[in-house]
Structures are given as C-alpha cells and as structure tokens.
Amino acid sequence: MTREEGINKTFPGISHLVILGAGASIASTMRNPEKNGKELPSMNNFIDVVGLNDIIEELPDEVQDDNFEKLYSNLHAEKPKSDEIKEVQRRVRDYFSDMELPDEPTIYDYLILSLRPKDFIATFNWDPFLYQAFCRNMDKAPMPHICFLHGNVAIGYSDEDDKTGPSGMYSKRTGNQFEPTKLLYPVAEKNYNNDQFISREWNRFRTRLESDDTKRVTIFGYGAPDTDVEAIDIMKEAWGGAEERNMEQFELINVIEKGELRETWDDFIHTHHYDYGKSFFDSILAKYPRRTGERYMHQFLPTTPAEAFQEPFPVPQDVDTLEELWDWYEPLFEVERA
Image 1 (cartoon, rainbow, N blue to C red):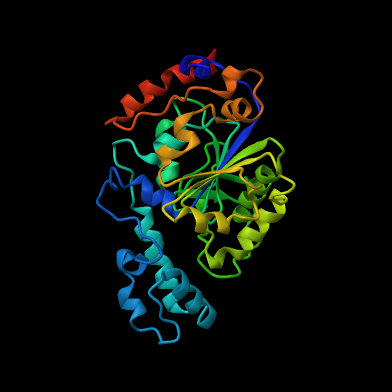
Image 2 (cartoon, rainbow, N blue to C red; image 1 turned 120 degrees about the vertical axis):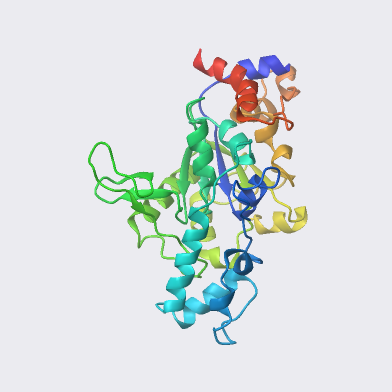
C-alpha cells in the first residue's frame, strides 16, 4: 500500500488512547523552548526551577528530599494543612499558569494534529501546553478529546453546568464562571472522587480504557511514579489485564531504557504487543498520523498483502512555522472532509 493509498483510506472505529506524563511536556519544549524562557521542571529539579528553596530550607530534616514528589508527600503526611503547603501550592500554580508555548511548532502541535475525534488524550500534567496546542490548531481540523487527570492550570470548571472552559472565564450560555481546577499533588492517596471535576475526568478516562474500540495505547513520558499507585490500580481495573486485551497494541515513548519501562507496564501488555521509542518521531503517531487506527487494521488484520506492507507517511521534522505544519497535514484533512 503506497503512501497516497494510506492517506486516502479512512474508516471509523479503532480508537487510539494517548496517556501523557511530565516527560511529554518536557519533550514539547526541547526543540523550541517556552516562549518566556521558563523551564519545564522534572521531579528531580522541581524545587530549584519553581523557586521553592526558601520554603524547603525551613522544613524539618525528616521531611527533606531532593525529589519534589517525595518531599511533598513527606510534608503532606507531617503537616497537611500548614502554611508551607499552601505557599508551595500557590507558587506552583503561579509558575505554571504563566507558561506559554512558543510560536513555532512543538511536539504537542504534532500530537494534537495526529489524532482524530475518535481518539483520546489523558494527561497527568498541570502545565497549559496541551490545551494551548489544542486551541491554536482546533480551527484546522477536528480534534481528539482531552481529559486532565490531575487538574490543569489552564482549565476551569463550572460545578453547576458540569462544563469545562478556560480558567477564570465565563460560560456564554449560563454566565457561570469556570473556576480554576484543583491540582492533585504527589501524595499516595489522592482521593480521585473527592472533587467533582477530577472525578468526571477519571470517569471519562475509565470509559476509554474499558472500550473494546481502544486498540492502541501510547504512554508518552509517564513512568508511573510511586505516588500514583492508586491511579495505576484504577487503570489496571479498567483495562482488564494483559490476557484479556491480547490483541491491543501498546506503545512506550520515554527516555527510560526499554527493559525497565517494559517491566513497569507489564500488567498491561500482552507478550510482544508493544513498541518502544525515545522520541515522538519514533512513534506510530508520527509515522501514520491521523491513520493509526487504519494502520492497526492493516498491520494486524490485513485483507491483502499490500495492506500488511503499508508504506509510512511520517510527519516532517524540519518545519519552522505552524502554517508549514498545517500545509503538510492538509491532504489528510481533505480526505476526512470528503
């Protein structure tokens, strides 16, 4: 099957679920950094990057840790309602709220454009990058669905309307304000059902994991940290186990070595049904953009030899503007509009 034939062949069904961790947001700014020069922190440099040292230095020794995930969990266990906790939360929200994607294309622009409305992105990240990429590409083609599993600084929620919108803005229909969503911090027990918005997002995520239409799952930059045990348990229950999902295809994108990452996700992957790469551009999303469901059928359930040996049509890595990126995707959009 030629490149053109692959682009021109579409059919409904076969949903692709993408799960994002901090590594995905860090990757999104590596080629073109955050517009104002802000660094996207990891858990290991979070304290320095966000500017929490003056608070941390005053904490007792038994709470201290260089890793923010462990430190916050320790602090929450010792002083869950302390002024220190409140000040950490305030600074974290302020730091992330001011972040902005560069004008140039980022990995999140590629990601958003490489999926369709039948697909779904679930992110654990607080930063606004994914939402900003969604907003600046949404007029070019129908977008995938998105949910924010740990809250997000860009997203607001109206309890009365049970609707989301830009944080701090007002609903045109009802006039109700979209209040900033709660951010879930790295503690062992996050209580996903205690907040209406968070509970709603996790219910949407579970539905996608449970669905028989979800045949592809990509885990991008998420290493399942120790404080996410509850999240992983929910995911395992919804997925149903590797033996029950013996035709589904997993994909792991991470700088963590293949063997270690495979072990982390062992309960989800049936035998050899997984792919691994260290970059988005290694992924099925980059090789068969907006056609990953079709590629699944051609690869695993081909009706002809030509389908089994389908030629990829990888996204270009050398574009300098969003306009160039949109122009490249336009033939795919055109087929979908027909």
